Image (cartoon, rainbow, N blue to C red; front, top):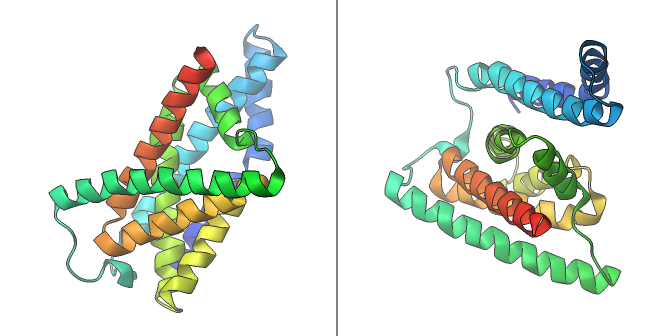
Length: 228
């Protein structure tokens, strides 16, 4: 990959793992300046740092990513029209849900029974505590992940190696960094589908749109089920 792309990945990883330092600092500040409980400080610390670190990541990565020259052959060629891109987004979301159902059936047949993803459950609980976290899950997270995993890692590797191998590597990386090994297959397949959407449309906005819509629907449904 280009040096610029490698730097972007390093910045993303640095800010991703900065949570182990950043969250306790925010918690300490909240406890020293407010009268909230330790449990609430822990919750709001995670929320505040997650939103802050994602905004900071985007502020650093976007200027680096979009300066000339472009270094991504995935986007070379004729892009889909805006109207057709919307069709791809909707079709992509349907494909993502079908794939998740299939993965769930496979995982259930192997493990005997499957609970909800620990990652999803955590995000839902945090959103219940602070609805503003919906912005992080539904918008900031998907945008950042598409820029890093699809545009940079998948796109960057595709310049050097076979496009299919690049898709597998980026999707595996995407799955592993979600930190839920029992659902690795599901995240891996999601990554592959998003790579496919990006490749076929040559628009990162399409994979972003599908990712944003998927996360929003999952969160809304999960909140509705839990709330009922």
